[in-house]
Length: 187
Picture 1 (cartoon, helix red, strand yellow):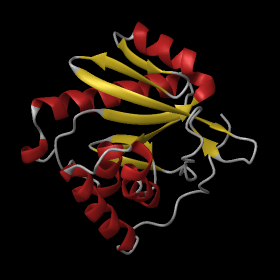
Picture 2: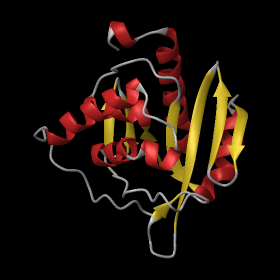
Picture 3: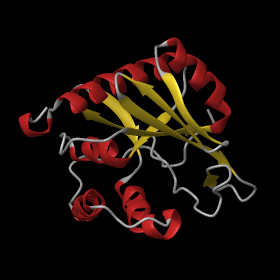
């Protein structure tokens, strides 16, 4: 970890992310990072402190996810209908948005169908020895650029910085060959 970004919260979140990856991998539950941690995995280094960990997984796994995380010491923070759950552990927030396929085959969060998700990559990115799937740079950029429109809240300084980094990342030449198709399996 870069010394400037390796504060206590960042180290704790990275440890929790490593733990969640292990738990979900053993349970055969696919998830994708989004938000600041996804950007860090795409860039390949920790760029800043983060206020939380944002994940996305299939809605049909919600009960299993809750049970697995509670059995691992996570406490349920808030549940937003069928759309999301937040968990707390070691003073950190882990937000999980749930997706499903709608009648048109789009990836949507139940109750928030007005804002469909773009396809999810299958390839993993590696950061500090942990490999996780992330939303693509284009998907993260689309989410950030439409944040005000769909959330009703203004962009924060970290959102503007993420937009700049994602635009640069998206326009940079690829250093590795493209991964597998971007349509997630229904597993």
